[in-house]
Image (tube, rainbow, N blue to C red):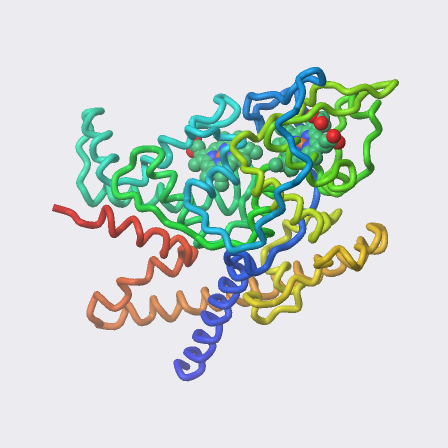
Length: 409
Ligand code: HEC
Ligand code: HEC
């Protein structure tokens, strides 16, 4: 019976493993940029622009009367070069719009990240418990810290009740980000990690994490009257509503906007992203021009992205949904929808099948393990086992912390 089972088990585990690899590959820093899709996060939550702190930095742009002489005609193009981002930059591009520079957020709507991050340190946990008069062992503290670490990683993958998921982040980016969050919250043992990105990847991160909070990916271009009524122009219209110089100015210093009937220049409602550089705003413009937003939510799974790119190896597959120089205009939305639907269903079915197979393999494996455990064997045999149940990145990101916290006295 074992002769039969073992190969199946191995194949199953390999399959599961490769599933994981595929899930992570498309986002490896800058390698497979995809267009932004679907409704904005606020539309998703059915939360109105006026009733939220999300995406708001608390600064408004200039009134029409405040003039702009410091804007020369020449414009800053996107650098087009490889960009080195620190964890701090990743935080700025992805999290700051909601959690602010300090990480304190805007409670009660947006929780502070400080305590959940500090909970990833065994030393701090031990300390905290002691202060509350609860004695716990170092081992228990380090177990709690490990759990805090994996729930942090899980939150970045899946989001929260009203926090969006950040499945667009690669493992490397997530790791650099978490190390910075530890620095920000004064957690001991944090290190500075950098990642290398392309300009469009920087643009992609900003759009998906920040602009998409308020702006839908696609839709009709609102009239000045509709703008005054509170409509927000979709991302696909932005690069034609304004030119690149105006775009950069709108994002980094704010600019008045034509609203009302008859249309007049008014102070904009959009917050100013003073913490984004002109180059980064140019990267956003570049990304939106080269990767036109698509109507459907691409949230099905990261695997879908790999399959849609026809990639066995998602790593180097060129993005097929882009029109690199904007030369081949994107197909009009109505033509794309049915096919995209079919693709998403196909992907869902494949996923279901693979998951089903994986589950039965796990069940078989459990049977085998319990059978083998019931045999007289050295007890160390399965000591590495729990790692199997954790996502691979949880293990790798966790190991960085183990290095810091693992030294027990
Ligand atoms: C669109 C707004 C938004 C963005 C962007 C955002 N978050 Fe959040 N975050 C929230 C909200 C809202 C909560 C409160 C819990 C909930 O409703 O999910 C939260 C909670 C958290 C918590 C948990 C706090 C707790 O009490 O456990 C952590 C950690 C966190 N966010 C990290 C991040 C990181 C890291 C990023 C950037 C990659 C990020 N968030 C980006 C909205 C956001
Ligand atoms: C908190 C919500 C919010 C976020 C986040 C947001 N915007 Fe906006 N944006 C608006 C609103 C509201 C308008 C329309 C009113 C106005 O212009 O202020 C707008 C309008 C615009 C316009 C059109 C200006 C015009 O004159 O037609 C551009 C360009 C723009 N946003 C770019 C961006 C970019 C790029 C990002 C991401 C870095 C972003 N926005 C993030 C709310 C937001």
